[in-house]
Amino acid sequence: MNIRNDMPKNANKIIDELSKILEKKNLKPSDHIVDLKQFDSIIILQIINMCNMVFKKKIDGLQISKSKKILDIINLIEKK
Image (cartoon, rainbow, N blue to C red):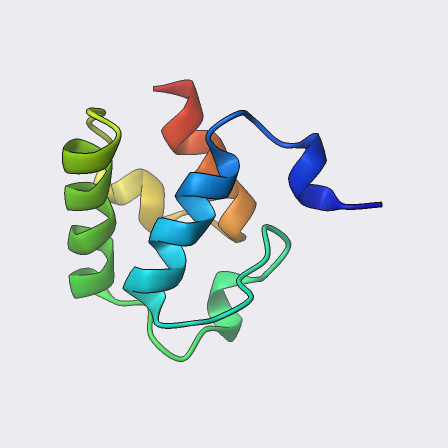
């Protein structure tokens, strides 16, 4: 089963954009954020900027920081 096929319509694009920001190839929705080498306030600002510039959506940094998995960030962007 391919997890990417069961996700929201923009999920693949969001994952591709997050991969660039996090500098991680093969990023998966099931990846835990605590396992990433980098995830700090600068990364959160980059994600906020990406949402604003690429997806024309505004999200809250606090909500991003509370995310446990990449899928949580995807869902956060999709529901805005």
